[in-house]
Image (cartoon, rainbow, N blue to C red; front, side):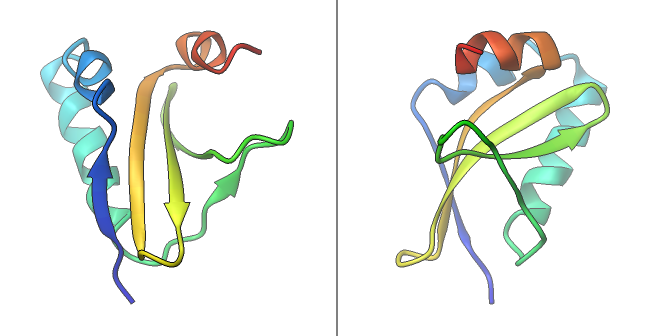
Length: 86
């Protein structure tokens, strides 16, 4: 079972801030998301899932009906908390 990948319109704002090596690591993780890998659901009643890439976090939502994962954010742990408002 393979998911399609979609990107939120604000996604590139965060991705462009990363250095070249981190962009490669993030892109590798994004490609892994196409598969049915285990996902950690965020608490606090939010619909987001998170993947960890070293000190960075990748936030996305899963639409099981469309078989799609939408990427919203990538950044450091502190940026991630600020983005979520926690």
